[in-house]
Image 1 (cartoon, one colour):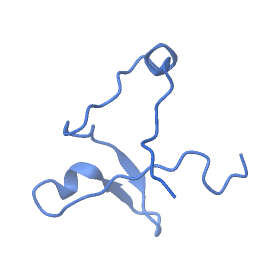
Image 2 (tube, rainbow, N blue to C red; image 1 turned 180 degrees about the horizontal axis):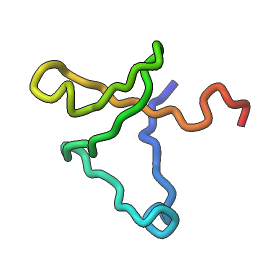
Image 3 (tube, rainbow, N blue to C red; image 1 turned 45 degrees about the vertical axis):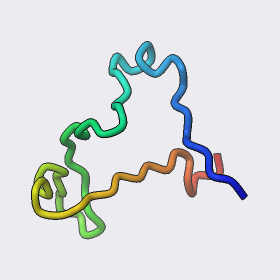
Image 4 (cartoon, rainbow, N blue to C red; image 1 turned 60 degrees about the vertical axis):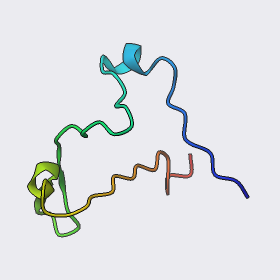
Length: 63
């Protein structure tokens, strides 16, 4: 078994108008609903805890 880094599409900037983040760069702030429906904002954790952002494109979608 081997682990390979995910490679973003080469046309990401053209499709979204945004640049990809670089390794070590601070993630942009965002708010999403938690499992209980309450909003959770990434910046609420700044300086308090370690945070791991893990995005799984097409997970559990059958696609």
